[in-house]
Image (tube, rainbow, N blue to C red; front, side, top):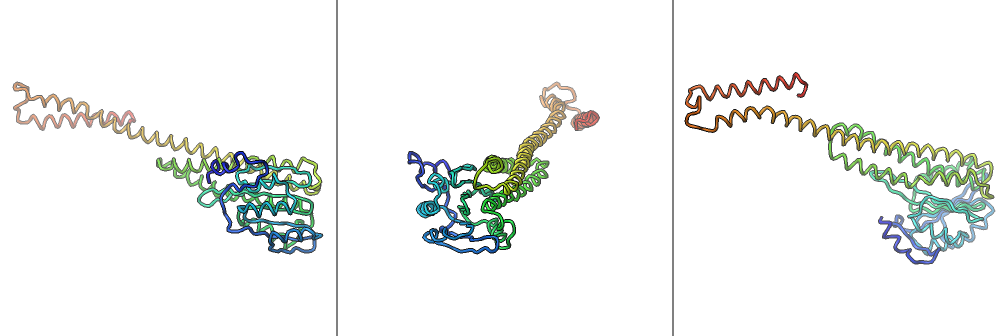
Length: 347
């Protein structure tokens, strides 16, 4: 996705204009609702027009929206749920940086979902936290959300505490997924460490690509600490004191993530320098061998050029054993040079 071209759609438009910026990753907009309390949890698939009725439930709600490419549908969903127009605009703009916005009666959080197979893909996740309501807007389905639904079905703290704990659980699952992506990157770094010593110049491209992926990873998650710090230090009606300790825990995970990510980035930079050093040493060895060969042949070339002048009165010109004698002398000179170079440790 070329973000710079995508963002041209928003030039000179009024604030809060709903414009989708990104790549379509779901065929349709799908809405799933989790209706739960401490005793039970129910899940329903909804249409946009069903949202007004479900808000009347006297239970905690999690409305999960998959597919954000439909500007009209997303705008209508945000309008029904009372989400600020500026937040609705940010939901549709997948080029947003990780952040948290306070709109008094609700909090709006932007996170990034990292998918790493052969290449790194970065999706956007938007989370809205209101009283007794959490709304998530995601570009496509992710396994971590199935795990959170499983926890809701089983019960425990996620059903006992308020929706602020559910928001924490979502953030914690996202941060944990970063470690999974980072583990795959670390495996690639280890493989490259073993291959770099071979001095294969083709590895430069792999190292450069991995460096770019780590940089994109870093840019996507670096602001996460500020977002999580907000939940640990700010007094807000939507965040209970008993849940803040859990936000501090995920904040610690984020700090650890940044430390490991920086280590991997430094390792990749070091691998590039190591590869260049190995290639340079390899080139030096080649030049050394070529220099030795040239040095050996310098006196031999001199002798051959002297006896190749063909003057009429040259000594040994008509000598019967002149040719083999010169060859023997040249061989002895070459042998002496080789022995001398070996004693010096040059070869």
